[in-house]
Image 1 (cartoon, rainbow, N blue to C red):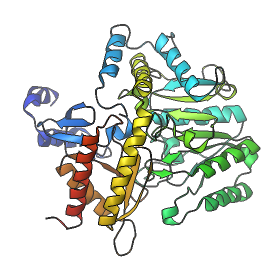
Image 2: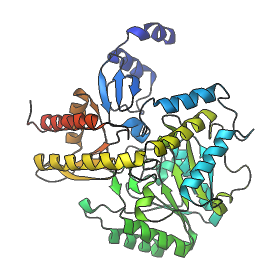
Image 3: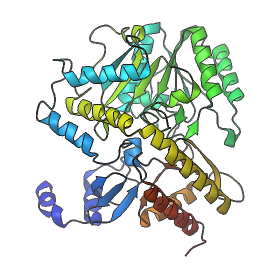
Image 4: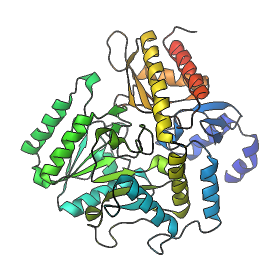
Length: 438
């Protein structure tokens, strides 16, 4: 089959590839759209049949600098001609050390922070938990309803959604506790969440047994829900009071997406540990934990690492991404694009009552889709909107515990014209999905 596919590649269309996919790839790996991408540039991609799409998914928040940015390509090409991989646990190399230094400087004062690099967001989260437990000598970890922290067993345990992530994959790691996350649209207030946290301390685990609280400054897969600044500040005060490590999961919110380099900056706090991944690598797999030096040094030698962690090619890409964040002011561009997108989505909400709420921070925006009569989450209509948008040439995906929220994760290099085109398609997709347009 491999030889047949190799011989037929140049002549294969989407359907042929997808038929082969069904035979060769397990069903557990979901592909949102029935297309096969051949190339991408900026905010656009083309499938194997030559059809063009606006990509407002960006590898699920991975491509803040866009597809195939020439600065990233040049950096990786230069590194490829030097060394592609050495494993940092065997011998150090400049890119890893330089990237760690850059990340530390972006978060705090010189000497205050250290960084360790990994490959995936889930690895970063798991190692942040290890570091917190090593530092405190405590077992408990508190996470939030609707959170997403990865697909490993510990990642699934921390994730606050039962389907599709948990299924029958347990038993999961122990000493994981959960409290509500603020969601005003569904009646969950900040006060409710803080009260639930105090109740948790009273009836399930004493605060002196809790190693860390982990939170996304804006929940990603949970529905693009921003944590109020006052809530983040309350968590910072509470964790400081009880000696609990505060971990901010910046895997999706990091590197300009919310209009600042990191999402936590909107609340005026500084976490103890920060997990980074996704857009750090500009399309190459890399992740890391950035944290206070005293905490990062808690694990003994050999306690942290990974064969591909901080791979040389990925480090080169990440350094190029950080250069682009500064030289092109991509966080500033995210604020501009976010304002335009938010305003246009609110206009569409007035036109289509199925849009229950528009929310987001920076260029991390979403619209929650509800049944017009009951105002309950409408996952089926959400999927229709996504399908119609894809047919018109726009790639979007959904999120939320009820899978009824359309999220926008376009590259920060998206042009005004591309944003206008995408929103025109969203208008058409809403019209078709709701029966206003045949």
